[in-house]
Image (cartoon, rainbow, N blue to C red):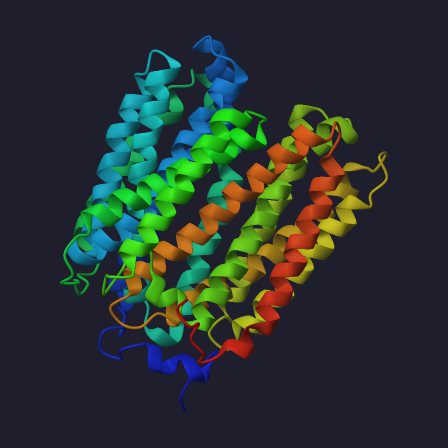
Length: 469
């Protein structure tokens, strides 16, 4: 008897031979390599967050300068995702992942040896490029490691370890800082990276390669468009209207040139061909909404707990941890059913549960106890973990054979652009209002509900294409 699939209408979007997957120890080793590279990227991002105050003090920098240790990493990661996904399709997804690990390790050494904030920021940007090499092809590799009927399980396993990385990062960072100095948060990457590169060289599958030549003008325009927009909007949200508006204006020009150039390409870096597919576009928009909502919560919640609920720093960390635990646990649970039920159902339920969790947090009295906060945070995190894998599966299986790299890159772009937008909204709300903590939670609930509604309506887009303007 054949296995029941999530959406039979999408089964034509794969090649039975191309997407046959691996089995037994081959699959185990290949997936272990993918997860190890992923954890290298996720852990370092979350560990560095904890070390910011220590780094700022040691390098004699202000808090606003220290924040660029995070911004440089995330902006370089986002700006390079789509060009590197296109290059990965040409050189092989496994090779691109290995290159990312090597760059990441070189940048980690540069970070650990930095003597001032400028050196550290530039090294973190290089580390972001390395992470982008890994993240741009991460899900594309999963597409070739797992057979089509089990792709949801592979994507859920990916989500599980992302959740674990986010959850473990602050704890690992705090432990390292308690026994040593901040450079060790970067030195610790070397043994993990050495194992990752060794495993990747032996276990990752050889994937079919695109014959489309590298689009250098398109790549440069893509990086410029994302970088100018990110830096410009960051300036606007922090009240620096002059240069913020100027850079945002230049980003609009850059985006116009990029989209005009990309219309001429058969396999564009910005995957306009994929975005014309209704199901793919909707899945990306749902992902974007989900991550906007999550970062409205993640960035603002520490301030909410500290200022509104008067919790000390140690308690703040413990009260945020249930979010990551909920994400990790439900990513594992939903992995067992993601291949059997449509994303329109599963992702909508997940985002509605997340919305409910945010509303429950928003309506708490200011004298609420720790357990009351923790279980509501857990509910929100569980909903988010339930939403991600089915939606990510929908993004990958609606891409036709040969466009796995573009789909994987776009999946990561939707995530990172959503996270960045959520953080920018928080910055803007904190600029406009003296105490916007609960406003941020309310906004997070609204965006999560919007994502749930969009997800539920995706059945209207089955088989449809969005006409080019």
